[in-house]
Length: 180
Image (cartoon, rainbow, N blue to C red):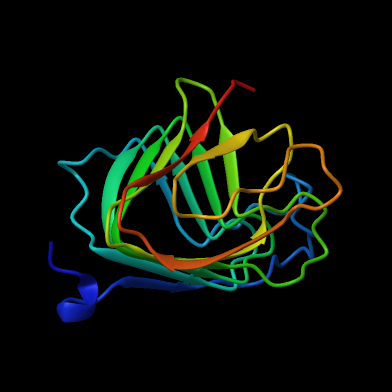
C-alpha cells in the first residue's frame, strides 16, 4: 500500500474555538468537531488522509460510517481525539493523536458510542502509531487488541494517561466492548 507521504495531500482542517466559549462538555454550547462524517461507506470515501488541528470539540467524528485512510493526524482538540458512533475506521500508514491539556473533564483519545452497532478502529500492519492522551473511561469502554502496543490503563484506575510511539508489524484493533 502506498502511503500518503509518497504522494497526494490530506484534507486539512484547522479547528476553531467554540464561539460561545464552551468547554467540551455542554452540547448546547459546543459541538464544533473539526470533521464530522455521517453515513459514509467505503465506496463513497475517496480521501487518503485527514489532519485536524485545534478543534473546538472532537478532532474526528464518524457516525454510522465505514472508511479507510492512509493517514490520520489529530492534534489538540478541545474534547476527544476520535469520536465514533457505530462506525469502523481503518488506518494504513500513520495515525497520530496528540492531546494537549484541556479544561474538558471528559476527554479521551477515543470516545465510542453504540447506537446501531459497535465501533472498531483498526491499525494495519506497518502503521506508524503515536498516541498521547487519556485512554478513556468506563462509559466509553474502549479496548485494545495488540501484541505490540502498550496496554492501556485499567478501566476505573486512577491513571488514565496513555502513550504509544511505535510502528506496528501486526494489525492492532481498538474496539467497543459494550453498548451505551
